[in-house]
Image (tube, rainbow, N blue to C red; front, side):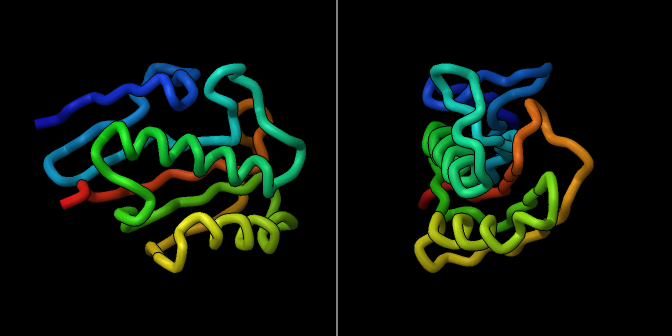
Length: 127
């Protein structure tokens, strides 16, 4: 059984998709970029600020679905350029408090709203 979940604490989708889907014990949030939930605009001009905001958005949708960053099992990270890889890694590493989910990270040609990163995760429910 699939459950579509929505929260006002994360940005509204900018396309025809759900913020997060719960399927059994698994949580599948939509990828998040560094967009402020209230203004709908990108936060900051550097990879650190946008990574931190993307994680705020992910935390909000995970919480709404009954999970958290500590329950993430896999991340896929998209960067607008690999020149930001080191700074992204530093900001990324601070978000999980020592938890190290499996990860894939690569550069893409362009991200929505010209963002510098997009992060998607797969998580499990809190038990």
